Length: 212
Image 1: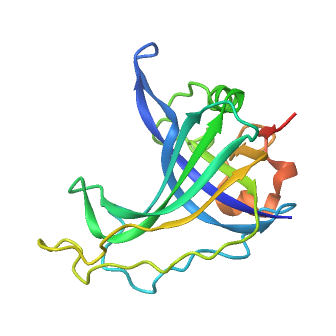
Image 2: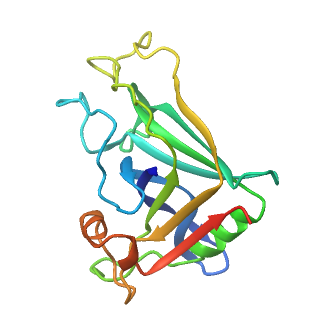
């Protein structure tokens, strides 16, 4: 069975109780996404990327959002959609498309996921061993096509947008999902490359959700 896999980095939020930044379970950035054989983590098919894009690494173009849903007969719903690229320096969207993955987790699945992430303090600068908010979501599904990115030659220009309406890409319900923190058996941080080589059996923290 093939699966959609998304390697993500959770954003941070201020926690009033701890009085410091902790990882936010409900949003972040997608660092790599595509389809895998469900027994492996090496991506075999990815969304297209243009060889040259009219923006640089101060911009984010792939986003993760997670929200609670009602109790239903499935674990949740995945929605993949076009999204506007975000300029983190200017703090605004630009006229070019990226994509977003919205996961709606139903009932107990949402609470289980929130508890799995927990209230973990953001790692300190120079700490190269502790977990850094990296997670991977693995959701069984048949592969589906992704559109090519599109937009203006100068996406910061004022005036009418070249992108027009953002388009849905795919939407599907799922009955099972695995979530892993990108750490090894000793709790040490793993890169995406290390996790892909190691495979699921070598990752240290796992949440398995399924219909009982």
